[in-house]
Image 1 (cartoon, rainbow over the protein chains, first blue to last red):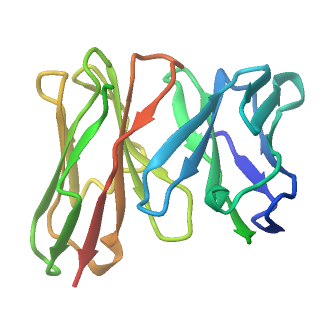
Image 2 (image 1 turned 90 degrees about the vertical axis):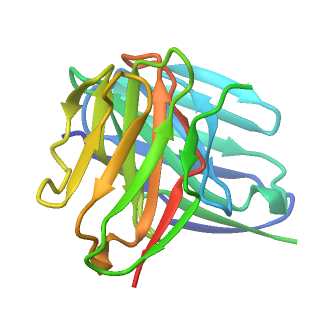
Image 3 (image 1 turned 120 degrees about the vertical axis):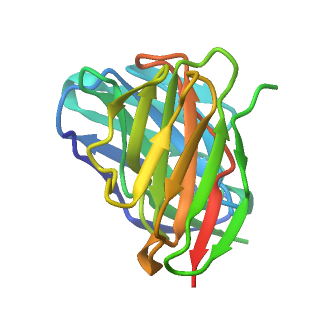
Length: 109
Length: 113
């Protein structure tokens, strides 16, 4: 199956700093999603992005499908941005949704 | 706003007992996923349904886990007997199908004692 690798595994920032999270995948994919897992465990949709760039407030994402990676940018980080960020890709004939291991982001005041 | 509903939110059960989780997907969503997430790890797919048919259950421990979606709407995931290693968050998600955007429920946190 498709392998999804996220980096870095952990990231600690001061409030106001910018960050870039990376997602690499091992094979061609049909689509890609970024999620933020809240403290109660629910996965919140951030971006649904097979290719190109999308922006939503302080967050943006870029997927370069031909080079098999996606980037999530967080600008002017806030303490509420803390949590785990997951990348997940759709692959195979059944569009199986496969997750990476996540990036744990901690934003300190 | 339409949501994926899961129940219960929390479940504590004793080892060797049976436990069941329920998921009601967003109306009209044909694809339904069950995931297991162990603390500190990413979600792992247990089973994927397209309408009432299983399209992927390659990671489902079939000796103790079962899943059904009889009418192609809501779904039940069962564990019998539960083991200590089954303690995890169980997440349900749904989508219209194919590679359309998936949405997750709030999950069921299972503790086996």
